[in-house]
Length: 486
Image: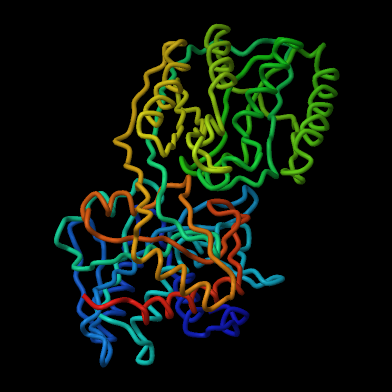
């Protein structure tokens, strides 16, 4: 375990977080963390079970004098987003996360940290292992594949949980208590293209976009962050008008729930236009750095010479692709009318990949209004249907409707105020939470979501605030003390 993390307080929380950092746990590849959780339950003589979806549930009886309290489920997801910088060598299937402490934050070297939601998992394990914390009967639910498909929450069956109350430990702003979230759906696009022979007397360039912050496609969608897909499409659109470029490939972004941070495209330019093309790209870099001078201080648009590709796109295919990516909506679509500064509907142009004779395009849509979730998904699909693409929608997941009369909301809010002498903010979140799906299976369960402060989730800029993690721990212990009797 990292020596700096060993020194952090509360030591029991960071002990388990440090152990989790050692365990590879990509979405859909959670076998190693599942084995760790089951071994933990056995070593601590705790009842456990797994379901067909491979969710893990560990139960612990009430401490002395608290057996009549309502049953509480603490819940977090065991998988993590696996993103790294292009110049970072890291195998997420086998390598531990290289974490370090800097200026009050825990960070990772060139990769996502996995604080989302490793810190939630660590808190659950620390509570399960403790003989000193007062609590009623508790269940700790660890779900699989939250980040790439919410598979664990989808597969949860009624009756698996016995709890009356659920504490979801997967939020990222200390002092904010969430009682509702947006629903979401993915829209996938397959756009075929025709190949053409590479032209003579042309120079080949690789255009690169890097240095972007990226971020969570829900939490960060309204923060003015740049999207590598949109920047590349804009650059191709503009340079094609000026220099008659030929496109060979386009590759940007990765995960459906992350704003694209990096990307590249391979183009060919007539030799007579090469010098002016290079000057144009350099000027474009300066223009973009000015436009995003507040939110993207490390943005860089660059070019480099590269080998001649095997093919280019036909004129029609290039025009259809560039125009559709450039036109595809991305970002905030509508703000809520009944809540201040709350995103109601958004869409994320997440990833574009070139494979053989198709472009494969991944997008995701979110809305706290169910009808608008489908509206923006159809609007994205329509953009690409105009150029003959095949489009499809995922199953989607429901939002979580706020319950202003929630008993656990009042308990957590009062506990926070008591501990930190400042009121917590109760709100809904534009990101998707498993609470929507869990509530669908357990409609009578009273739920709330909270957590420590995490910044840059779903990107290598992810960092976990140390002081807020202490507050998160203290709050959870206080809440468990104040759970009412049945």
